[in-house]
Image (cartoon, rainbow, N blue to C red; front, side):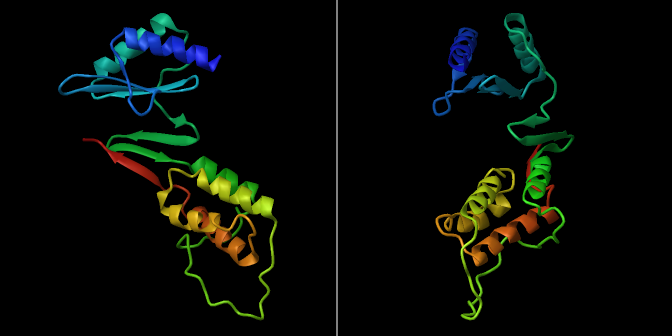
Length: 195
């Protein structure tokens, strides 16, 4: 069904003057010398935006004339990303997801950390650094990798992801520091300014 829906939708958009993106085949656009409208399709979800309100209104009417549409309001949530449209721009974050994974891994009552990564310490040979639950470690890393609106944790998550074959207590401690960091900074995200 998704393939048939995409074929129907793409031929409809192409017929109405939209061009398919060269790299992303699910992106469609229409533009002139000054303005543009972008239409992004993900399975049965569509988001669109334009530099001109009348183009957005025309697109909305065009889609409603051909397809049954469930919602055409302002974008607030898409693929796990929360979208806050403000007067000074747009703010994309994953506060709900952060709270969900903190709860999932029982980290929601821990203290927060000021930074997502601590420099490696010299290992004390007397302290054991045994193995930890590989499935839990991988699940925690996977959950952190989905935090795409938090580029500030990318390096730390990437460093921890290298240890997924045989994680140890010290490596799990590093993952927990990232969770403590996002606990203290759940509303971090990406901001785009109005031009």
